[in-house]
Amino acid sequence: MSPEPRPDPTPETRMQFLYALRSRGVTDTRVLDAMERVDRGPFVRGLFAGRAYEDMPLPIACGQTISQPSVVGLMTQALQVSARDKVLEVGTGSGYQAAVLAKLARRVYSIDRHPRLVREARELFEALDLTNITAITGDGSHGLPEQAPFDRIIVTAAAEDPPGPLLAQLKIGGIMVVPVGQSDAVQTLIRVQRTEDGFEYDELLPVRFVPLLEGLARDG
Image (tube, rainbow, N blue to C red; front, top):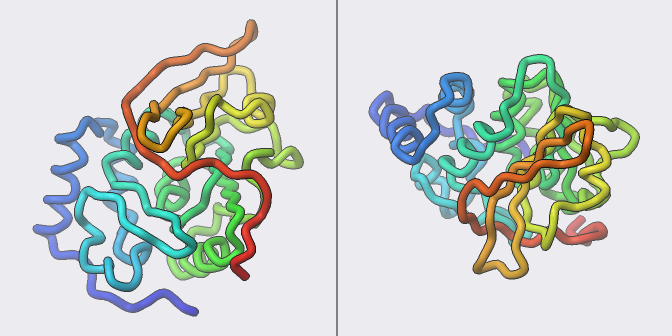
């Protein structure tokens, strides 16, 4: 299934989209530039396609969601991605977060437990000529040991604690951004930096994500 053709957002829509990002704390110019260059429209399909440029999470296939743009921006900003970084994303979802990261990093590996989501994201990445993303079907709770270590790791599903296998795959000096919380009602976005002596943790903001689940989904 190829991406649905749709008109480009108007200049006014783009301006409102970027204004919403800035007003919610996304101030990093590289992140804003990347999000201006990645049209959110193709990543939102079906009934909610007309709301693609609103700052709100929206349902996607397999019972998952595409995060609201300001949260994508804040998570990306917290990750402090440089042009030479190799990034692991746990939770491909719609592919939107990976597409934004691809404008900032050298290489993005994105893993998801839903085969359908990975398939559809690959089609979008190809259509958008995002050649530095590798999308993989797999159990993201275990990371991607064969490509470790990573400069940056971003997790787009909530765990009770930062997962040990992911911490182990982070380079010294690397940063991981992950939502943590024991329920879907109370979660906090955490930034973890690996140092020579261990890990440093910073709480960033309250968030709400789907839970990080082990194993593969059976959705074809």
